[in-house]
Image 1: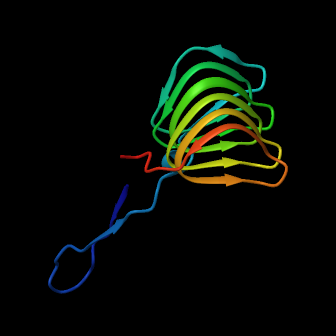
Image 2: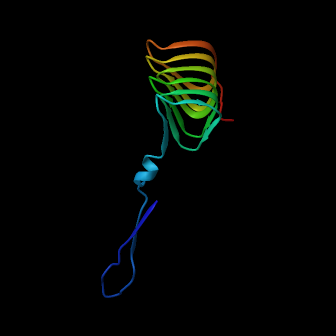
Image 3: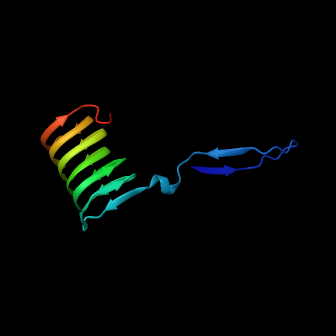
Length: 135
């Protein structure tokens, strides 16, 4: 949150403050990126958006959006608010809001989410439990 103040010039000489709730550049770009030459074997936990273009093996727990890019390959149990798959993923997904498998995306495993979007051309091998994953 950004606070800007300006003093109103008038005869009463009272201070008037203008408060801006616009996001700062840091807040709007608060995300992590795993590049396509990276190979990570670990558990990942984050409170910001994460994009994977490399390879990740382990467990992933993200409070926001996980995007597996077109070069990304993930073998993990995933817990996130939103999961977007453009590349390849294997494991179990629990998403509190939504799972999207885009046209180039490939997923093998189990999905538990309130919403599931599967684009034409996407590949899904597994089971789907469309329950209230957030509760």
